[in-house]
Length: 249
Length: 288
Image (tube, rainbow over all chains, first blue to last red; front, top):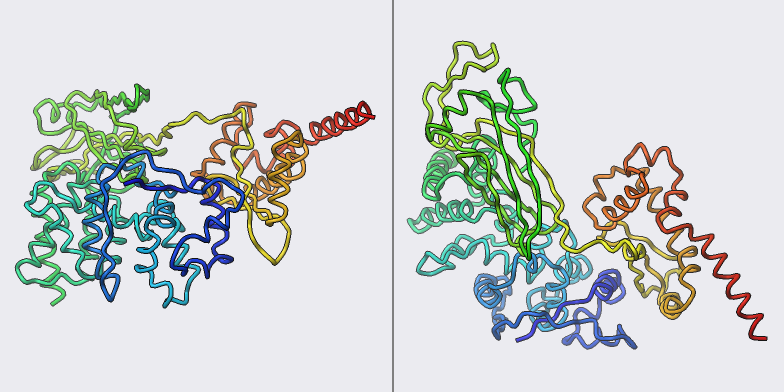
């Protein structure tokens, strides 16, 4: 399967013209794009890497319910992207405007959603700082969520995704915004600690999730978190959550 | 990880506080490239006897912390000697890389004290946990150049974009992207596209690029430069000015005229434009 990315000028032209094109974004196909770039070469180029055929699940009444499943599908298929490629707006925006046009319609519910312009800008393009855009873009956030949670040492490498079954986007944004999540060992220790609680029937509410993220950010001020073994760090996090549970309840 | 000027609950040897006296902890870095890899030669050094003793006994390590925030790369390298050569595939890094140098406790240290502690700590010892930071040297922020900036094509910092709009025909300029974007109405864009293929480059530089650059410098003068520092156009402009001995900073922007900085960057466009027009005149005469 070939992915398509947007060349630079078409990408910037589409970004700048979202207001003028907004009704086109709820069209069932992306044919309007080729008319928009009339008399010019195709705005898309083929991405150099061959990737396995895959299709995202678009069968849920509430599209957000499909996110966890689609993270697995997309990340498994695109695991071989380098992180530099995976930060590239030309690729994600190109995919959104081409092969995954139907998925974008489904995920954004564009025909029902009247706040077109900002929603389109955030989901089809990178509209924030580079880092946050990766989590706001409707396709790139699937890849980065997959990368942050994938653990080949687990029987189910995507087991840690269960932490995101509730409040997916909020948790993802909060976690991804913290520098410590750049180190997968720290991220795994964090998610693993939370998952263990939830497996034992203790629901970790949003406030505790956020407090624990803050705890790690503060801890990182005097400790080099990366220096710990994953188990040591997980123990520290578990103790913190224990004390938070006592306080909050 | 930006760790400059933080405060700690125990003495930390660093260059921005006097927790320790008569001790230094220094860092050095050289960057090179080999094939598709970035090579970092890292050196950390201290003259503090207490810390050196801890390292010698295996109770502390030199630690190099390497992070590229935009690609979510974050890794540490532990070192006994304070000298390491690290190879990182280019595909893991993108532009800005931050490198921090630490001495870190390898094990819990009970009643740690050091003869070089500031007098304020006289007679006091501290319980240090494993992974606590004991020393911080100056950090480095480096820009990885993965493609050579093509200085021969200065207009490559610009993108001319079509904007379909019924509102107005005026151009628009966007400074908040990796390239300076100039938006033309559909009709103007089509005309520009035709003209830009021919001999009219100098005229386009003086009529479109030059005014846009003046606007850019005026905005830089009134703004916090940090707003723009990460954009590629800013880095290129800074480099081009540096090559003609002009340092792009607030002081320069206050002192120099925006139009003069602009014309220097794109090689005196009004002059080139007039010269081109004379050439057209001459060619017309010859045709008759």
